[in-house]
Image: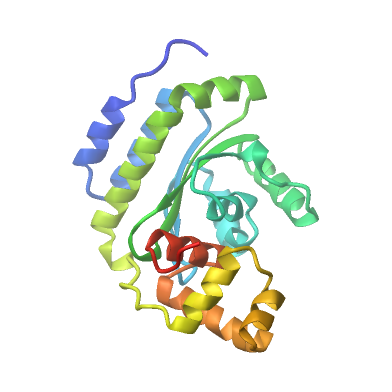
Length: 239
């Protein structure tokens, strides 16, 4: 890796843009500045609709959406469970489904290295900002060490802009959780299994699922892990 590239101009460009097309052009420019393969901003809302900008090939974007890969993508699943940036190599790719997904991605031009930044916005909004490349582990380590902090800032700029000019996509303000929904979320956050939660609250597992789904809907969460994280971040539960 040569001399570190100055990324402040990217922030200035983000400040002045007001369209998705503008974000797409900035993603391309950032990719070219860093001399990497791809830059991606990816927002999956509570209805499962996907929105954002990417330098991935159109064929891969279409395939990803058609196959609902966001439901099995180890990157999305891994980032739901964490708050800090994630190197793809630290994720679990051992499952048969994950291996097949990865092979499909590589065949469609996705690089073998990735670094994804989870972004949590208002009312349960969740998005990812990803940089992706094909290189050795050592070269990738140098890139992420050099630009990691800058990329976190850029990621949140991207998300702020997306929220500004796509305000109709923002989740509705969540309603308060019921006392029983709070009990359920608290026990799950403490690491109880679903069976243990149902036993502790003297309810059936079917009734438990109803409470979980209700809480997820109110929080605009995409899965149970996301609902727990959102409950904790808003102070609805304390563990």
